[in-house]
Image (cartoon, rainbow, N blue to C red; front, side, top):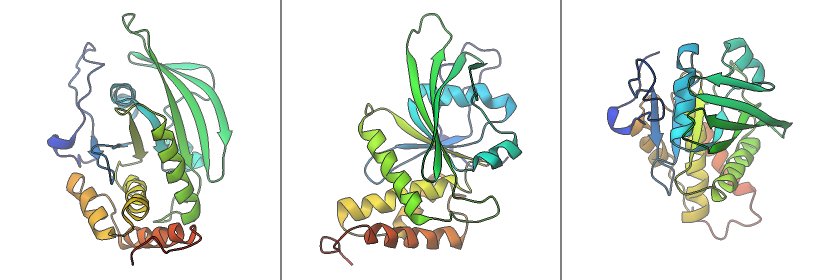
Amino acid sequence: MSDYTGDHYRPILMSSMNEQNFSGYINAVFINSNCQDDAFVVTQLPLKKTLSDFWSLVWDYKCTLVVLMHDPQDVSELNAQFWPEKGVIRHGGFSIKKISKATMAGYRETTLCIKHTDESQQTSLEVKLWQLKIWPKNETVPQSPSVFIGLIGMMEKHQQQQESDCHVLVTCCDGASRSGLFCAGAIVCDQIRSEGCLDVSQAVRSLKKRRIQLIPNKDQYTFCYTLAQSYLDSFETYGNFKH
């Protein structure tokens, strides 16, 4: 995969610095939300050789929520599962334990407990992993704007309960083709709710400043407007919104 990331916006790995051949590099990028700098971390699904780096990213930047933009079946076909279906797995200096799994409307939630195996660190990190189930692998956009909006709303509630330095990690097969739409959707919904206006072009430009390959086609750009209309339709009145 090509590296889409400018150095200025790339997270630097820190917790694995004692490992052999450690470089601190990972192909990931910070993305601003509508109201918070670097709220999201966008990265590709980990390769076998980068599993330790992926969990280092989760640990170092307190990514208490991981949003996986592929259906569980597609992840299986990609051979990209990076968490245990049961018990505990270890990658580099991290142990990952599955706590629970639940099927929600449009997504699957798995709760994980991450620990650093360094004896000097006694803390753990609880991570919610959400797998989207409404985006077929051969489609350019999800099937349901309303479910997508619901997921964004759940993400916002989750973040309100976290410490201010926590991040949301969004991942897809190449770190670009799907992840940007989730970030754009979150920005658009927050624009409408907090500012009473909508500027999809500004939202998309802000993403592309960080990683040009985000929102890679017209279908996703158009979906942002579809999502915005669906979000507005969820309110009983439009009186508080500017048109």
